[in-house]
Every structure is written in C-alpha cells, then in structure tokens.
Length: 414
Image (tube, rainbow, N blue to C red; front, side, top):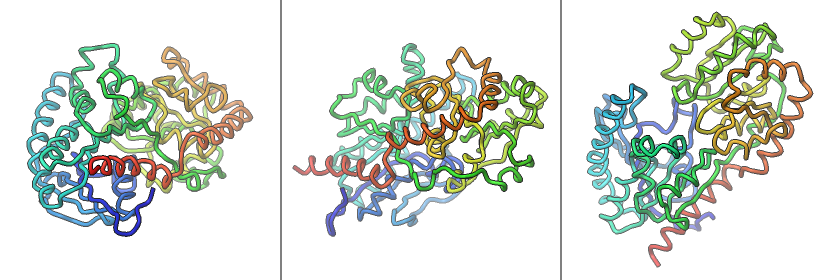
C-alpha cells in the first residue's frame, strides 16, 4: 500500500536507544531502522524522539529523510547484564527515569509536529507513547521487536520481574505489532490479555537477492588465517550474555578430537568477548576459535557461504535473522530446539535441531555432520526453498506493516 501524492501522514516515533543498530551503523540488527525509512520512502513525514549518545548534546538532525529529535541524558535506558538484585534495581531506576524524561521530551516534540499517530519502538517506550497520544487525541501503536517473556511463562515471579515488557503488552493501544522471531509471542500476548483483534504477529522480511547461494570466499579464509576449505562452525550475532555463545566454546574439545582442523568463528562484537576468549584459553581451544569482530550486513553473505555449518544455540528462540540469512545462502543450520524454532528449522529437512538435553553431545553431532557433505548440501538446498516460502522480500514486508499503521490512522479519523 503506497500513498498517492499528497496523502502522506505524520508519524512520531518514541525510542529509548541512541542508535538504530546493535553494533554500529549498518552492522548487526537493523530492525529499528526499517520502519521509519520505509515510511519516509513512501512519502510520509517521520519524527523520532531519542536520546543523544552519552556525553553528547541534544538537538535536531536529518537522517535519510527522517527528523531526529535528540535529548541529552546521562542515563542508559537499557542497562546491561549484572547480578539479579543489582540488575533489577538498575532496571527500575532507568525505567522510571525514561518515563519521566521520555514523556516530557516527546510531548514537547509532539505539540510542535502534531502527528497523526504515535508509535513506540520497544517496551520502555510503550507507556510514554500512550501518554503522548492521549494528550494529543491521536492513536498509538506499540511496536515490539521480540520478547524474553517466553522464557518465564511457567514462572510467575520471574515473569513479573520483567515488568517493562509486561507493562508494554498491557498498555492500551490501537495495535500491538510484535516481531515473530520464534519466541512464543502469541502465548505471551495471551498471558498479558492482549485483545486478539489488536495483536499483529509478523516475521521480518529478507533480501533474497543479497542473501543467496554462492562459492566460499578466499578472502574470508585469509582473514581468519586458515587454509581455504577449513571446516568453519560459525555464529553470527552480538557477543552478548543471552546469546549463550559459551556453548560453542565448550563443544570444541570434543569436536577437535574428531576434526582437528575445525575452527569456530564467532562473528560479531559485544560485552562478552573477553569472557569468551578466556573460556577458549581455559579449555585449550583458543587456537581453534576466531573473533573477527562485527562486519557490515552487506558483507554477511560471503561469511555465510564460507561456513560449513551455522550455529544458533539461544535459549529463547533460534528463528532469527541470522538463521534466515544462512538458510537463504543454502547453509546447513544447527539450532537449539527452543520456542517455535521448528517452524523454520524442520528436523532433517531444512536443518538440524538439538534438544536442550543434547547440548553436551554437540561436538560429536557436528563432527558427524562435517563428515557428511552430501547431507549438509541437501539440508542447505531445502533450507533456502523453505525460508523463501515463509518470508516476504523487504518492500512487500514493509508495505504490510505500513498498511496496518495507515489503517489505524484512517480508523481514528473515521
């Protein structure tokens, strides 16, 4: 649904992070940048209220046809990992600080730009967007890019401790759009009593012309300092605590006993890098583990094509962008069987699923798979065909989401 000339709407997006990218511009998860860019490309006016980088002054700037309204703050509104009591205290303080600072700042901008719709990008932002929308008499839409509440569906206390997400799901809105990343989002929405008619569950789109099959890259092997054809076991994600990348390090001793030339490649950057490096040293596998850092998304296809196997071993879900991209490149994916991952990784048809109880035997499983080139190729071919049937290309996927937003505006005006 593309607007005709003169039919553009005005959107205000409330966002608690200073950047749209998880590991720098054009690197890592760029989901937060897709909707505003698509809105601007289709002729809509987009304003985003977000914090400035720490230590930097606030102000307004133009970015790809979007107006950014930055406010200075000493707070980091999405704190990192710490011991539970400390993490909970920091979470409460930062949440309350954002409710105050974010609401005040967003209201100031909203009264100037007079949006047709207020859109929150995340859990912290949902109550702020609701208050701003109420003050202006316009609808609000909550946009959440994944949920960790699925990990505590059977633990009421732990579920409530993640109060920012619980509050976001329960905040009144015209629509709640949740990214379907395989984390049982529908069950979470039901638990939080989101009215079914307001809940929208969408998978991300994928550029199949960029993520496509091809030969391995000699440059990748050279960069890693290994001979071409070396068996590469690769992860492509932030080096963060919740990614459970220590599992890759811990399976290496068993794998190396059977495939001495194998190398684990942890592609990405993050706060866990030093801890993972120390784990590799402690287990005596540091020479067989590489940390090449983060690379631009446009470079990822060459890395996928050079890998023998792509690993995804998260507890929450493994139906995420790196898995989609690897499958589109006809790579064999080995993933932990969590959430609704098996809707994407169909066992022995589009990849290999490992039960949670089977992590200890991962080294031998991967050794068997490395020995069976024909099996890996078959799984890769089936993977591309399957993921192509599940995902839209990016323009069609954005049309789908923007049509929902425009329908909300139209309904409010009617």
